[in-house]
Amino acid sequence: MSFRDFLLGKTLWLWVKCGIIYKLNIYSKFKIRNYIPMSRFIKFFHEIGIKDVPKVGGKNASLGEMYQKLTKQGIHVPNGFATTAEAYNYFLSGSGLKAGLQGVLKGLDTHNVTDLAKR
Image (tube, rainbow, N blue to C red; front, top):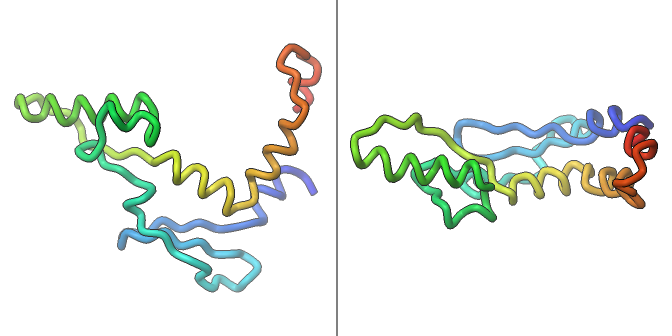
């Protein structure tokens, strides 16, 4: 099985407006397997600041900080959202990609350019 087939054949994830993420296994005729409140995986800029770097990364935390500070001063900053590190980890684990990526990266020698090119 190619890595592309591995990526495409596992799980279909649907993000819906009602605030729930549905995980559907393609081989189960689209039965809902579980659901997660979207608030765990999506944080709007008004909810995050520089203290949230571990949760949403540095760029998103900075955007949240700017949104919170500058909008109070009357400066228009476009609203937005960030996906959390928890969402990324949940996706990797739930889709089976984490094990596949670990297998690809196992024994990686970053100083061996030929090996890097093959991967």
